[in-house]
Length: 464
Image 1: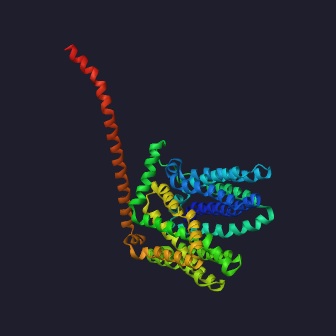
Image 2: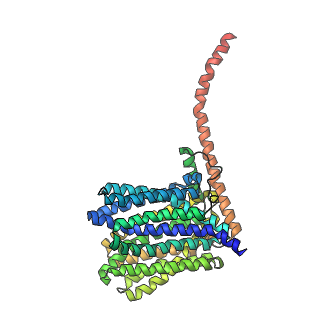
């Protein structure tokens, strides 16, 4: 029995391994591509253009690719998307070596890579519950392992990229990123069987109308489930403020108060270690812990204290231990929210709904830097930190106050009923729209039908 269970868990471990390898490469290229632009052009503005070119299609496709993923199949989408990304990322150093890589070419290549990665990642998250079910792994544990792979990839990939750039250059690191995408494809194809994540048997040939209807169905489901909507909204707002902290307020703090650039790396590294520890703790202990209380307390401890700590202190000694605690507390959030989403969203809607949730969570990130910069410029660093921290504190009070957050607790019957109700509401609205369209079409066709019948009636009258 143990051997059978171990074999059943191989697809989940294979998925996590493929995700870890490809995400580590992505973390490396997140350092290497901006550096490549800077050493080539010396322009921070052009570096920003390339970064936007990569992220904009990635976030957009995360939100809208669900109907396509349903028809292609989850596993096949992952394999195709990452294979295309591997080719594109390997083309960048090849063009650089031949002197043909200008800004327009680089922006175009990373935009296409971001688009196909967005589609592929839209298929990755729904594979987690499917592979977890094969091995009998609780969703909290499976989500924790999956999130831990992401944290590990960031912790390993970014420092490794910094060391490798000095040794082989930024273009060489981008080539390694392309190789990691290919390795991820090979790992997933080997360990995740073709029967997992097949295209939905009821899926029809995609048309613009059917695509829009499927996309709307996923969005209606998200809108009808108050807990999922609350999770998406909370993530969007907190990510906006986190981005303001990481991209603007923390660097300004390190520059103006600590006067050492290494402070940014130390704070980020300690926070990342804490996050990884929290994720792994939640992965193994999560199935036995009360979800709502752990999530609420974890978010309360993790989210706002970093802002207030930087506002209060001008040295690393008190800040680093606090960041470690905040990281551990924040690490428990994703395994819980991920498990809840997998339980509440029907399997046939997961690609669409999870893609919309992730895109919603990321939508504030591009604006976080603008918000942080404007706030710090107009009010000063301390006021910006206190204001952002206060806003974050308000967000963390939601699970304690609003009844919809009670759905975080394990209530299988209620969760199933909520999912069925949300799905029924989405289907009812879709049917109502279809009936309205049919009635409108019938109304439009009535004059033409009357016109066709009129000659026949006149002819009949004449004959009589």
